[in-house]
Image 1 (tube, rainbow, N blue to C red):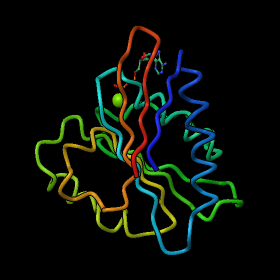
Image 2: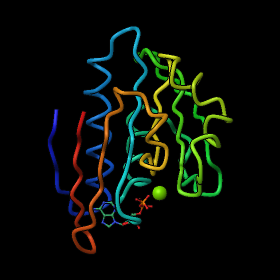
Image 3: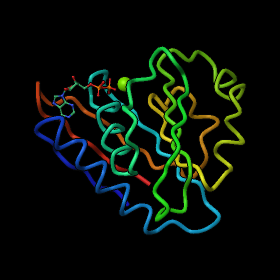
Image 4: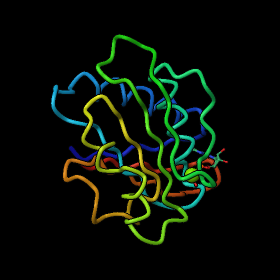
Length: 151
Ligand code: ADP
Ligand code: MG
């Protein structure tokens, strides 16, 4: 899968994420953990996208940027999905993959009941699972973003 979308405002970016996560979950098989690797420009819309994704998962709690907190865990209440937790990881300040490994990363990505989204995933390329869905955010102009999905 390789496709791109252009969004014209933050709301569209959130909507795209909510639609996408529902589609992705339909294809989920029992054994695999969903890992999304978000990359691209600062202000590109990665955090905005994940707010829409959290909403699409039925998470009511406000998802703020974890830039100062590397990892945040949200419980998913919605019984319809085969997943229980949404992990939001932000590697913006990460110097070495070990810092993320020390947070129990391997366990997190090996539990199929988790969905894991990683901002600045390129900083921890070496430890990303092979089936990571890459999402690249390009700043086109003030309100326009190009979002490219690669699996
Ligand atoms: P990142 O996490 O990639 O650094 P953020 O989501 O924190 O980016 O910030 C994106 C900023 O760009 C927000 O202030 C948001 O309001 C603004 N913005 C403008 N247009 C868009 C768009 N089409 N999609 C997402 N964000 C947008
Ligand atoms: Mg961010």
